[in-house]
Image 1 (spheres, rainbow, N blue to C red):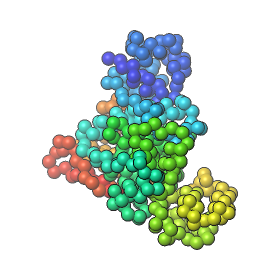
Image 2: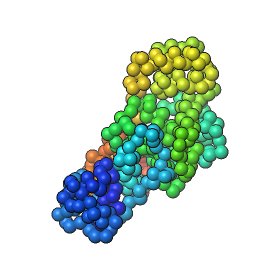
Image 3: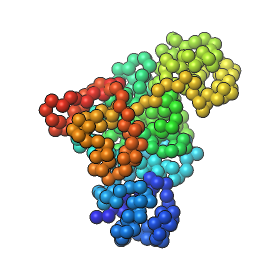
Image 4: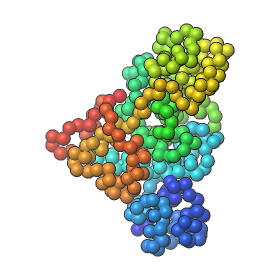
Length: 361
Protein backbone atom coordinates (compact mmCIF):
# COMPACT_ATOMS: atom_id res chain seq x y z
CA UNK A 1 0.00 0.00 0.00
CA UNK A 2 1.19 3.49 -0.87
CA UNK A 3 2.17 5.45 2.27
CA UNK A 4 1.62 9.22 1.99
CA UNK A 5 3.99 10.07 4.83
CA UNK A 6 6.89 8.43 3.00
CA UNK A 7 6.30 10.61 -0.04
CA UNK A 8 6.44 13.68 2.20
CA UNK A 9 9.72 12.52 3.77
CA UNK A 10 11.30 11.70 0.41
CA UNK A 11 10.24 15.04 -1.10
CA UNK A 12 11.65 17.03 1.82
CA UNK A 13 14.79 14.89 1.81
CA UNK A 14 15.52 16.13 -1.71
CA UNK A 15 14.74 19.74 -0.83
CA UNK A 16 11.72 20.02 -3.13
CA UNK A 17 8.44 21.78 -2.47
CA UNK A 18 5.20 20.37 -3.85
CA UNK A 19 5.23 22.65 -6.88
CA UNK A 20 8.71 21.59 -7.99
CA UNK A 21 7.89 17.91 -7.51
CA UNK A 22 4.66 18.29 -9.48
CA UNK A 23 6.57 19.89 -12.37
CA UNK A 24 9.21 17.16 -12.31
CA UNK A 25 6.72 14.27 -12.48
CA UNK A 26 4.25 15.91 -14.86
CA UNK A 27 1.18 16.38 -12.63
CA UNK A 28 -0.47 19.42 -11.09
CA UNK A 29 0.35 20.48 -7.55
CA UNK A 30 -3.12 19.49 -6.33
CA UNK A 31 -2.32 15.90 -7.20
CA UNK A 32 0.87 15.97 -5.11
CA UNK A 33 -1.07 17.47 -2.21
CA UNK A 34 -3.65 14.72 -2.59
CA UNK A 35 -0.97 12.02 -2.59
CA UNK A 36 0.54 13.39 0.61
CA UNK A 37 -2.84 13.71 2.33
CA UNK A 38 -3.76 10.18 1.37
CA UNK A 39 -6.80 11.28 -0.65
CA UNK A 40 -5.74 9.04 -3.54
CA UNK A 41 -2.69 7.11 -4.73
CA UNK A 42 -0.47 7.90 -7.70
CA UNK A 43 -0.80 5.66 -10.73
CA UNK A 44 1.98 3.06 -11.12
CA UNK A 45 3.66 5.04 -13.90
CA UNK A 46 3.46 8.22 -11.79
CA UNK A 47 4.95 6.41 -8.81
CA UNK A 48 7.84 5.31 -11.02
CA UNK A 49 8.47 8.95 -11.98
CA UNK A 50 8.28 9.96 -8.30
CA UNK A 51 10.83 7.29 -7.37
CA UNK A 52 13.17 8.33 -10.16
CA UNK A 53 12.89 12.04 -9.33
CA UNK A 54 13.36 11.61 -5.57
CA UNK A 55 15.98 8.83 -5.92
CA UNK A 56 14.18 6.41 -3.65
CA UNK A 57 13.20 2.88 -4.76
CA UNK A 58 9.47 2.44 -5.47
CA UNK A 59 9.26 0.01 -2.53
CA UNK A 60 10.20 2.82 -0.15
CA UNK A 61 6.79 4.41 -0.65
CA UNK A 62 5.00 1.23 0.42
CA UNK A 63 6.45 0.78 3.92
CA UNK A 64 5.02 1.67 7.30
CA UNK A 65 4.72 5.30 8.34
CA UNK A 66 8.03 6.83 9.37
CA UNK A 67 8.64 8.68 12.63
CA UNK A 68 9.44 12.20 11.48
CA UNK A 69 11.53 14.43 13.78
CA UNK A 70 9.68 17.55 14.87
CA UNK A 71 11.27 20.95 14.21
CA UNK A 72 9.94 21.99 17.62
CA UNK A 73 12.07 19.48 19.53
CA UNK A 74 15.22 19.42 17.37
CA UNK A 75 18.01 21.82 18.29
CA UNK A 76 19.71 23.29 15.23
CA UNK A 77 22.87 25.37 15.29
CA UNK A 78 22.84 28.62 13.28
CA UNK A 79 19.06 28.70 12.83
CA UNK A 80 19.26 32.32 11.66
CA UNK A 81 21.15 31.47 8.46
CA UNK A 82 19.39 28.17 7.72
CA UNK A 83 16.84 28.02 4.93
CA UNK A 84 13.57 26.16 5.47
CA UNK A 85 14.37 23.66 2.70
CA UNK A 86 17.71 22.72 4.28
CA UNK A 87 16.11 22.35 7.69
CA UNK A 88 13.37 20.11 6.29
CA UNK A 89 15.92 18.04 4.34
CA UNK A 90 17.95 17.49 7.51
CA UNK A 91 14.85 16.46 9.49
CA UNK A 92 13.84 14.09 6.69
CA UNK A 93 17.32 12.54 6.89
CA UNK A 94 16.56 12.10 10.59
CA UNK A 95 13.45 10.09 9.69
CA UNK A 96 15.56 7.77 7.53
CA UNK A 97 18.12 7.52 10.35
CA UNK A 98 15.33 6.46 12.74
CA UNK A 99 14.40 3.74 10.24
CA UNK A 100 18.02 2.53 10.12
CA UNK A 101 18.40 2.71 13.89
CA UNK A 102 15.26 0.61 14.42
CA UNK A 103 16.62 -1.96 11.96
CA UNK A 104 19.93 -2.14 13.85
CA UNK A 105 18.28 -2.34 17.27
CA UNK A 106 16.16 -5.27 16.11
CA UNK A 107 19.37 -7.19 15.39
CA UNK A 108 21.95 -5.91 17.89
CA UNK A 109 22.01 -5.02 21.58
CA UNK A 110 23.12 -1.39 21.39
CA UNK A 111 24.38 0.64 24.39
CA UNK A 112 21.66 2.07 26.63
CA UNK A 113 21.60 5.85 27.07
CA UNK A 114 23.52 7.15 30.09
CA UNK A 115 22.77 10.87 30.02
CA UNK A 116 21.77 12.46 33.34
CA UNK A 117 19.22 15.26 33.42
CA UNK A 118 21.24 18.42 34.10
CA UNK A 119 18.61 21.05 33.37
CA UNK A 120 19.06 22.59 36.84
CA UNK A 121 22.81 23.13 36.37
CA UNK A 122 24.68 25.99 34.73
CA UNK A 123 26.71 24.92 31.65
CA UNK A 124 30.13 24.89 33.37
CA UNK A 125 28.85 22.82 36.29
CA UNK A 126 26.91 20.52 33.98
CA UNK A 127 30.03 19.80 31.92
CA UNK A 128 32.06 18.86 35.01
CA UNK A 129 29.16 16.85 36.45
CA UNK A 130 28.87 14.82 33.26
CA UNK A 131 32.63 14.27 33.13
CA UNK A 132 32.51 12.94 36.69
CA UNK A 133 29.44 10.81 35.94
CA UNK A 134 31.26 9.22 33.01
CA UNK A 135 34.55 8.86 34.92
CA UNK A 136 36.50 11.08 32.54
CA UNK A 137 38.27 13.23 35.09
CA UNK A 138 39.90 16.21 33.39
CA UNK A 139 41.82 14.39 30.70
CA UNK A 140 41.38 15.27 27.00
CA UNK A 141 38.66 13.38 25.15
CA UNK A 142 40.35 11.44 22.38
CA UNK A 143 37.22 10.84 20.31
CA UNK A 144 33.90 12.55 21.03
CA UNK A 145 31.84 10.45 18.60
CA UNK A 146 33.10 7.19 20.10
CA UNK A 147 32.39 8.48 23.60
CA UNK A 148 28.83 9.50 22.75
CA UNK A 149 28.11 6.16 21.08
CA UNK A 150 29.47 4.24 24.08
CA UNK A 151 27.11 6.26 26.31
CA UNK A 152 24.06 5.37 24.23
CA UNK A 153 23.81 8.41 21.94
CA UNK A 154 22.99 7.49 18.34
CA UNK A 155 25.33 9.52 16.13
CA UNK A 156 24.72 9.93 12.41
CA UNK A 157 26.30 12.13 9.77
CA UNK A 158 24.17 14.95 8.46
CA UNK A 159 24.43 13.88 4.82
CA UNK A 160 23.89 17.48 3.68
CA UNK A 161 26.02 18.98 0.94
CA UNK A 162 26.01 22.39 2.59
CA UNK A 163 27.78 24.02 5.51
CA UNK A 164 24.58 25.95 6.24
CA UNK A 165 23.30 23.11 8.44
CA UNK A 166 25.87 22.65 11.21
CA UNK A 167 24.41 19.95 13.41
CA UNK A 168 21.27 19.08 15.32
CA UNK A 169 20.14 16.84 18.14
CA UNK A 170 16.91 15.58 19.66
CA UNK A 171 15.38 13.04 21.97
CA UNK A 172 13.19 10.35 20.42
CA UNK A 173 11.29 9.18 23.49
CA UNK A 174 14.16 8.00 25.76
CA UNK A 175 16.77 7.74 23.01
CA UNK A 176 19.15 10.65 22.19
CA UNK A 177 20.26 11.37 18.62
CA UNK A 178 22.99 13.66 17.26
CA UNK A 179 23.50 14.53 13.59
CA UNK A 180 26.81 16.04 12.47
CA UNK A 181 27.88 17.85 9.31
CA UNK A 182 30.98 16.10 7.99
CA UNK A 183 31.95 19.00 5.72
CA UNK A 184 33.49 20.82 8.67
CA UNK A 185 36.96 20.33 10.12
CA UNK A 186 37.44 17.56 12.67
CA UNK A 187 37.97 20.10 15.45
CA UNK A 188 34.80 22.02 14.66
CA UNK A 189 32.80 18.81 14.25
CA UNK A 190 33.98 17.69 17.71
CA UNK A 191 32.81 21.00 19.14
CA UNK A 192 29.47 20.56 17.35
CA UNK A 193 29.09 17.09 18.90
CA UNK A 194 29.84 18.47 22.38
CA UNK A 195 27.48 21.38 21.71
CA UNK A 196 24.64 18.99 20.83
CA UNK A 197 25.47 16.90 23.90
CA UNK A 198 24.95 20.08 25.88
CA UNK A 199 21.47 20.48 24.41
CA UNK A 200 20.63 16.87 25.26
CA UNK A 201 21.51 17.22 28.95
CA UNK A 202 20.69 20.90 29.52
CA UNK A 203 17.47 21.20 27.47
CA UNK A 204 16.16 17.65 27.66
CA UNK A 205 12.87 17.35 25.69
CA UNK A 206 12.48 21.12 25.83
CA UNK A 207 12.15 23.35 22.80
CA UNK A 208 15.67 24.89 22.66
CA UNK A 209 14.90 27.95 20.53
CA UNK A 210 16.52 31.34 20.67
CA UNK A 211 20.00 32.61 21.36
CA UNK A 212 20.30 31.79 25.08
CA UNK A 213 20.07 27.97 24.73
CA UNK A 214 22.70 28.16 21.97
CA UNK A 215 25.01 30.20 24.21
CA UNK A 216 24.51 27.67 27.02
CA UNK A 217 25.33 24.76 24.71
CA UNK A 218 28.45 26.58 23.52
CA UNK A 219 29.61 27.18 27.09
CA UNK A 220 28.93 23.54 27.91
CA UNK A 221 30.93 22.33 24.90
CA UNK A 222 33.86 24.58 25.75
CA UNK A 223 33.95 23.39 29.37
CA UNK A 224 33.39 19.74 28.44
CA UNK A 225 36.23 19.65 25.91
CA UNK A 226 38.57 21.93 27.90
CA UNK A 227 37.92 21.43 31.64
CA UNK A 228 38.73 24.43 33.82
CA UNK A 229 41.21 22.90 36.25
CA UNK A 230 43.38 21.17 33.68
CA UNK A 231 43.42 24.14 31.31
CA UNK A 232 44.37 26.58 34.06
CA UNK A 233 47.17 24.27 35.18
CA UNK A 234 48.69 23.74 31.72
CA UNK A 235 47.85 26.81 29.65
CA UNK A 236 50.80 28.69 28.13
CA UNK A 237 51.45 32.21 29.42
CA UNK A 238 51.21 35.12 26.98
CA UNK A 239 50.59 32.77 24.04
CA UNK A 240 50.93 33.65 20.38
CA UNK A 241 48.79 32.05 17.68
CA UNK A 242 51.65 29.65 16.93
CA UNK A 243 51.77 28.69 20.61
CA UNK A 244 48.04 27.99 20.56
CA UNK A 245 48.39 25.85 17.42
CA UNK A 246 50.77 23.58 19.33
CA UNK A 247 48.61 23.60 22.49
CA UNK A 248 45.29 22.94 20.71
CA UNK A 249 46.49 19.50 19.64
CA UNK A 250 46.38 18.45 23.31
CA UNK A 251 42.63 19.17 23.54
CA UNK A 252 41.83 18.56 19.83
CA UNK A 253 39.91 21.81 19.45
CA UNK A 254 40.09 24.67 17.00
CA UNK A 255 42.58 27.45 17.63
CA UNK A 256 39.66 29.90 17.86
CA UNK A 257 37.83 27.78 20.46
CA UNK A 258 41.00 27.48 22.52
CA UNK A 259 41.64 31.23 22.50
CA UNK A 260 38.04 31.86 23.54
CA UNK A 261 38.30 29.35 26.41
CA UNK A 262 41.51 30.95 27.72
CA UNK A 263 39.83 34.35 27.63
CA UNK A 264 36.70 32.95 29.33
CA UNK A 265 38.89 31.62 32.15
CA UNK A 266 40.57 35.04 32.53
CA UNK A 267 43.88 33.66 31.33
CA UNK A 268 43.97 36.29 28.56
CA UNK A 269 43.29 39.98 28.86
CA UNK A 270 40.68 41.50 26.60
CA UNK A 271 43.40 43.20 24.55
CA UNK A 272 45.44 40.00 24.22
CA UNK A 273 42.38 37.98 23.19
CA UNK A 274 41.36 40.52 20.55
CA UNK A 275 44.89 40.59 19.17
CA UNK A 276 44.89 36.80 18.86
CA UNK A 277 41.45 36.83 17.21
CA UNK A 278 42.64 39.35 14.62
CA UNK A 279 45.74 37.28 13.85
CA UNK A 280 43.67 34.06 13.62
CA UNK A 281 41.32 35.70 11.13
CA UNK A 282 44.20 37.28 9.16
CA UNK A 283 45.84 33.89 8.70
CA UNK A 284 42.60 32.29 7.50
CA UNK A 285 42.24 29.95 10.46
CA UNK A 286 38.53 30.61 10.94
CA UNK A 287 37.75 28.67 7.78
CA UNK A 288 40.85 26.48 7.53
CA UNK A 289 42.12 24.76 10.67
CA UNK A 290 45.93 24.59 11.00
CA UNK A 291 47.39 21.14 11.69
CA UNK A 292 43.96 19.57 11.50
CA UNK A 293 43.10 16.40 13.40
CA UNK A 294 41.78 13.21 11.72
CA UNK A 295 38.03 13.16 11.20
CA UNK A 296 36.00 11.26 13.78
CA UNK A 297 33.77 8.49 12.44
CA UNK A 298 31.12 6.20 13.88
CA UNK A 299 32.50 3.02 15.40
CA UNK A 300 29.11 1.60 16.25
CA UNK A 301 27.90 1.31 12.67
CA UNK A 302 31.34 0.21 11.49
CA UNK A 303 31.31 -2.72 13.90
CA UNK A 304 27.72 -3.56 13.07
CA UNK A 305 28.43 -3.70 9.36
CA UNK A 306 31.58 -5.73 9.96
CA UNK A 307 29.48 -8.27 11.91
CA UNK A 308 26.87 -8.31 9.15
CA UNK A 309 29.54 -9.03 6.57
CA UNK A 310 30.55 -12.09 8.56
CA UNK A 311 26.99 -13.31 8.02
CA UNK A 312 27.22 -12.57 4.33
CA UNK A 313 25.27 -9.30 4.39
CA UNK A 314 26.59 -6.17 2.70
CA UNK A 315 25.47 -2.57 2.96
CA UNK A 316 23.66 -3.12 -0.33
CA UNK A 317 21.56 -5.81 1.35
CA UNK A 318 20.80 -3.47 4.23
CA UNK A 319 19.81 -0.67 1.86
CA UNK A 320 17.56 -3.09 -0.01
CA UNK A 321 15.85 -4.19 3.21
CA UNK A 322 15.24 -0.55 4.15
CA UNK A 323 14.16 0.30 0.59
CA UNK A 324 16.62 3.16 0.34
CA UNK A 325 19.51 3.89 -2.00
CA UNK A 326 22.93 2.74 -0.78
CA UNK A 327 24.24 6.28 -1.22
CA UNK A 328 21.64 7.49 1.29
CA UNK A 329 22.81 4.82 3.72
CA UNK A 330 26.47 5.72 3.22
CA UNK A 331 25.85 9.39 3.95
CA UNK A 332 24.09 8.63 7.23
CA UNK A 333 26.83 6.39 8.61
CA UNK A 334 29.97 8.34 7.70
CA UNK A 335 30.62 6.18 4.66
CA UNK A 336 30.85 3.01 6.80
CA UNK A 337 34.60 3.46 7.29
CA UNK A 338 36.01 0.95 9.77
CA UNK A 339 37.81 2.33 12.82
CA UNK A 340 38.65 1.01 16.29
CA UNK A 341 36.03 0.88 19.64
CA UNK A 342 34.65 -0.60 24.85
CA UNK A 343 31.33 -1.82 26.08
CA UNK A 344 30.31 -5.00 24.37
CA UNK A 345 27.29 -5.33 22.10
CA UNK A 346 26.26 -8.64 20.62
CA UNK A 347 23.84 -9.43 17.82
CA UNK A 348 20.44 -10.70 18.94
CA UNK A 349 20.43 -14.37 18.06
CA UNK A 350 24.09 -14.28 17.05
CA UNK A 351 25.38 -17.59 15.80
CA UNK A 352 27.48 -19.62 18.21
CA UNK A 353 31.10 -18.58 18.24
CA UNK A 354 30.60 -15.21 16.55
CA UNK A 355 32.85 -12.53 18.16
CA UNK A 356 31.28 -9.79 20.29
CA UNK A 357 31.25 -6.21 19.06
CA UNK A 358 33.26 -3.78 21.17
CA UNK A 359 32.91 -0.02 21.52
CA UNK A 360 35.97 1.91 22.73
CA UNK A 361 35.58 5.34 24.40
